[in-house]
Image (spheres, rainbow, N blue to C red):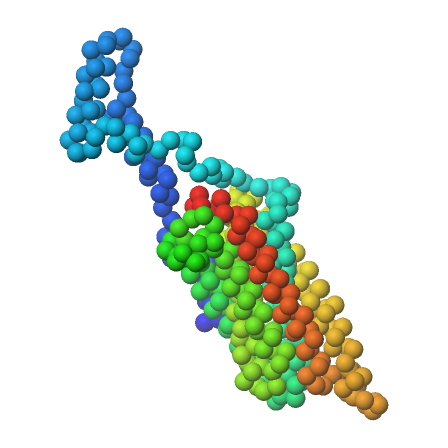
Length: 324
């Protein structure tokens, strides 16, 4: 079951049908209408032009629409929103955009918050004085939560592109009618902040399990969003190289920054305080809520900054999702 959930985002591509581009259908219809009313001026006959004009006027009047009013329905190119054409970025071109670095910051913090849990969950349960059986149970809970989150996020974010949003959520639509996919990074950031805040104040096994579950959900949401947003915003031609940059850099930088420099440093600084003046064979281990409390608070605050960067990503990619 866990393997199926793990591969869910890839399998969902076989289940979810591709979205139809409305612009393409409208373009085909307008092209057909243009061909129906195209005028042949090669013969130089004025009679044919007059007959065509009468035919067009008769056609419009048959629909009970005045000719003068029908002209108002014709879209002027000057009135249409200027939407940038789709573009395929190379990795170097992608790194010159603000969207790429907003996404980098968000992914580094969210992925780093997840690796803090996977690398230190055994020490967390030991420091809080929980039963040793809770460690494998917590790892299984984290894995199940992040695997299920991958599947659900991919499917829901795809369906959300066609949702009808209320007026107060219009800023999340990036100019389109549905919910822009980077909006789910906002959700992941909120969940991550709540997860590590609950872990920072957890003193019971139930509170710790809640924080582990929320942390797994936030960690799992990042991966399908990373793939899909990379392909939609920066094009599919170089999606392999572009995605691997986000994948590799987020994992390396997030693990090094939060799991090593933050969590391990805070843990080592509280070892002596937890043992006092006594020195025994367990002196290299930390006991107490302070061993990871500051680390969770730091990750929680950094996750709140990801809300800002995710909203910025929505704004910078509004033309992409308006086009789609």
